Image (cartoon, rainbow, N blue to C red; front, side):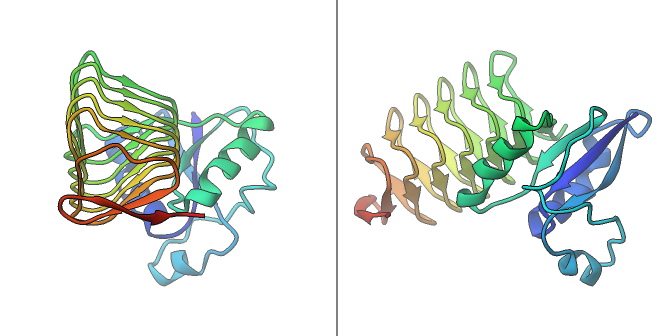
Length: 212
């Protein structure tokens, strides 16, 4: 039996804990605990699984698999790299109520919530997170550590470079490209390409400012 460890003990981590039994067979995996700096949020919600330590200092064991449950972009990559450098392995979490096309490619460590759609010939790089009802259209190319909030919609042939964030109910028009670490605000419609480190806001979306 493999031990699952949830990396992050906030709301994201609590959501994954609730859904683990939907994705992983109980005779193959058990939840060992959480990696985080503070477990106060777990106790407040009646979760008594142990806090195993700081994710950047933890020493992975061969029978452990990690689930990334950190939403802060500045922390996500750093934590994954620290754990993998020490031999840690990440599990891929695809809820059975998500719709994944047979020709889609899902990278290791991805987390895909219920009611998401990944369409024909789309490619997700490692450690992408798709929240409830987000969708990736056909032939999209999604970079590492991208976060899609609930109801985020990517139409066909969209390219998102690494660490892009698409907020709730935001839409990206077909064929658009969003550069590294760009952000699309909630309820916005991105109708043109966006350079790296820019914030897009409005309908139609305009590049509001650079993000430093």
